[in-house]
Length: 164
Image (cartoon, rainbow, N blue to C red; front, side, top):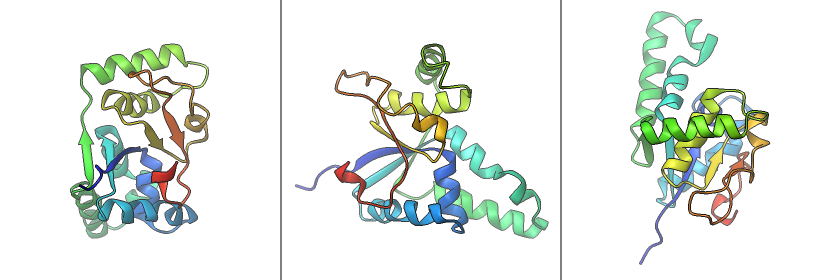
């Protein structure tokens, strides 16, 4: 019997690095997509990550209108892939995000980060991938709800993540 795919949460900057394909971070993220395509990994994305990716900051606003439309189609298609699991913000995520903001206020200054981490906690995903230096400082500081270790907040490394 085949093993169940590993679940991981992706922060917006990881999604954008994959979609833009034009920086060194893409090379660190791409192997995870290959694992997902092979059925060994499923990527959980909070809806707030989808929102952030669809705006892509200044770069998308500087494109001509027809290119913006195509860019949005590419982004939306990415989130429709079979290995992507989109998660909405419900009461449990809201409560957990508020708790995280209270308990880790010195390290977690953005509500957005709390929502991403709370989504991982809510859906029992033990690993979050990000390039955000502030979020990375929280690695192994947040106990998992099942009492079996702490939430891992990791920088994509390009290696086989199933061994970490």
